[in-house]
Image (tube, rainbow, N blue to C red; front, side, top):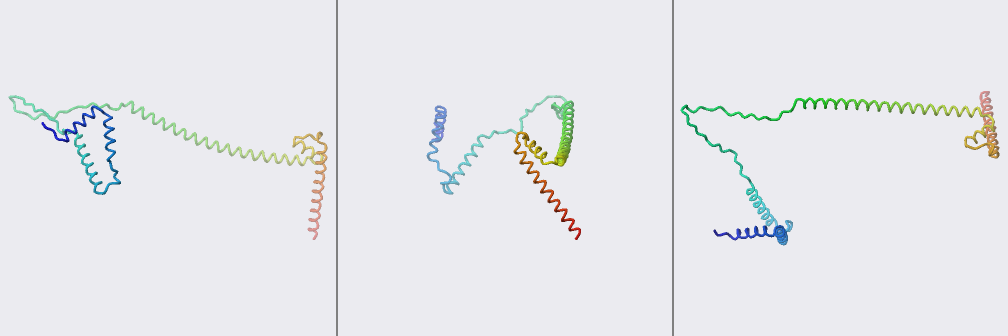
Length: 219
């Protein structure tokens, strides 16, 4: 039986594929790339022709790859010979044993979900309690700090009141600065002189204020 030119070329390509394999395919790719024209360079008419050709090729390939499906199974007819007339047989029932879920598994799953929900509830309650305790701790700490600051201030004021003489006050200032009054006598004298001047100025100012207030009330 004679072959057409297309069939001869197809047979030749098949033989080349079997013989050379990937080398032949790579050579064909490079050959096609040489004369391939991008779609942006084609005119509208040429572009439509190319798309039509591609659609036809794809439809042909899908039709070739499609597997025929037989919707109806062929059932051979069985003929039986009997002296009795043919009676209508009842439909055949087929029992399919599907694996059912075990009752124990369902109960275990429910028990696990309940335990998880209970644990989450306890965690939320404990988290709320922890936040409340942290808030109370912060409040008590701030209250204690304010009380300690107030007590320190009162102690400092009382200490200043007890230290009445300028020399004692100078010695106390040196001790607060981690200095010994015996090692720095010159500094002690200067501080004592400074405290004397400050006390005299305060006394004079208070005396003038009292004098002015008494004159004001007399007027």
